[in-house]
Structures are given as C-alpha cells and as structure tokens.
Length: 434
Image (cartoon, rainbow, N blue to C red):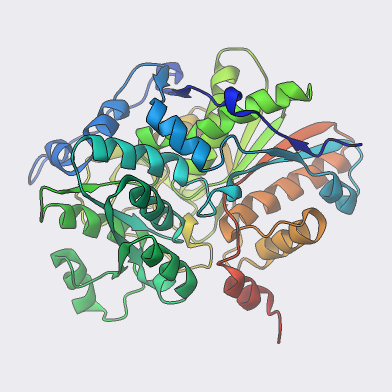
C-alpha cells in the first residue's frame, strides 16, 4: 500500500525553534528610527511581549520551546502530517514530478497561525498581561489568537480589515465564541481609525491600518499587549516548527524536496515551511529552491522596492528593511485577503535580495487560483483556504513545466489553512451554484 500520510510521533515534536538570523548571508539589517516623533523602538518595548522582543533580536540559532508551549502544541494536534499527493499527481499526469503537502490546516482554528499564537499567549500570561490585542486580514490570525487566549484565560481584541469583516460572518462568530471582541477596521475605537473613516465612511481597510489601530489601542491600558501575526522575526521563529517537522518526515520516506512552495503576504507560513530547509542550504547540507506565491493585489516581493519602510500605515512601528510597495499604498481587496499586505518580512526580504527566494504574483481575479484549489479538493479531498490555493496553483504550474522538460523533481507545498469558512469565496470567484 502506498504511504500517502507521513506522520511523526509526539516524541518527535521538536524541542527547539530554528532562528535563521545567525546564518543569513550578510546578516539582517537592523530596524531604524524614522527621525521624528517618539522612539518607535521604545514604544514597541511597552506595547509588545518582552520575551518576543528578546527573540526578535536573538543571535541564537536554536531557541528552546518551553514545555508549556510544547504541551499546547500537542493539544493543538502537533506534530502535523505530511502527505504525498498521489491522486493530484495522477490527475496532472505526472510521471517525473512528486508532490507533497504539509497539513497546517489541521489546527483547531484551521491554519498555521496557532503556532505563534500559542507561544505569544503563553509568554503574555507569564508577563501578567490579561488582554491580547491584534490585527487580522483573512481572519485566520485573529481566530488563532482568540483560541490561544481562551486556553490561557486571557481576553482578545481584534481589529479586522473591514472588507473581510463584512463578508466572513461565520469566522467572526468563531472568534466571538472564543471570547474575542472584534472591530471592523478602520474603526471608531482609535483616533487613526476615526481619521480614516472621516475621509471614507466605507473604507475597506488594510492590514497596515489594522496594525496601526491595534498598536494605538494597546496604549489605553497597561493590561493590554500587542501580538503580531506575521512579518516580525519572532513570528517566523515560532513558525519554524513546520519546516523542522517536515525535514524529519522526508527522512522517514528517504526523499527530499527540490522546491518548496508557500503563499506569501507578510511571510509567516512561507517562512515556517522554508526557513529550516534554507538553513540547511546555507550550511551546504542540501540543494533546494524556494518559491513564494503572491497575489497581484499585493506583489511586494515581485514589484516592491528593497528599502526601509514602516510596518503599518500610521507609522507606529520602527523602519524595517523590507521589500515594500509603500506603507500608504491602497491595495484592492481580494478574497484571499491574508496575502494583501504592503511588505514582506525582513528575513524573507533579505533572502529574496540574496537570491535564495524567488516569487511569482498570480492574477488578482483569483479564478486560476480557486480553480487549482477545486482540483486539489476533487483529487486529494481537502478544502483549502484561498491563500493556500495560491501555493497550490504555483506548485501545479512548476510541476507541469518540469514534467514538460522531462525533469525529475520533488515539490513540497505548505497548506497554510482550510477553506471551510471561505466557501462564499469559492462560490463568488468560480460562480458556483448559479
């Protein structure tokens, strides 16, 4: 019988996260102050979790995962399986190309976001914080943080990009079931939100705006702390659990990826699957390529400039060296809104700049993307999120190209989330049920 599922035991759960910063060619450019107003670095010190900020600047290659976090990971279903996509290979007529996918959609809230949410909630509780504040785009991160907070006995306040808040009613309900208070962003809860609404009462919002609102909101009480779901170094460190598990799983079946594909908005799931493999490439232990699948709505790695920019629209964060479209750029809403962010994570940006990561931007109408997801559903049986569908589309295109050339290739895809709360997007994009 073919071994489609490659599973690890609980004893195989990694005990350390991987931090690629010490291994980056040329190092990682440091954050900068913008030169006006308050110190953004000092502001982060009072707004964010202390332990996470320590990890943000750590030069340790391996960072211990606290036993409390490992217990939370196990409760949340880690380790997660790796699958060989035999049926999708057959559907595509592949003879030379092997496809695998990592199942981050199997988390309690349906995405990889719980990997850092659980860590951040754990550290926040240790530091005596009682209210976690955050942004969310597609809603996966807000749901994950609300879930993690509920396990730790904490409250959550979520600023959700209005364009998605307005149509994802079921996901909003799920957040509220976990105890979260959810605000459409821009909102009337902050001065920056009110400023945005004064110019456009129906402003669709963006992740950058939601981050700005969350950071401002934290200043209202010492009990509050800000938790970020992507981009920053500590988030990518926590997400490395994905790739570390995958490396062990490939060893079990005596195979190895030639190409790792993940979708990318800010960079958390792509970094999670790719960085442990990139670390081995940098160390000369393996050969592998890495492809970030983006949307033309926010092609930061494809069309962005590599320069210092703010991580939020209002300019509350320090300046970070990133591939950016500009923090004030207006981006068209899409169904896969988790990809609609103006900049890529500094770590991913540095690797793109050094040539270790390449990127592709897929059409904004998302028809080809959701068509690929439908094919994945019909062949493999799993309904995936629109963001993950970008990775599947890009991987299918790469597989077809390799097959046409007669190249033998092993491709690994990260399935970052499920699509059970995104069915309306499938219906609208593919015009189903009409």
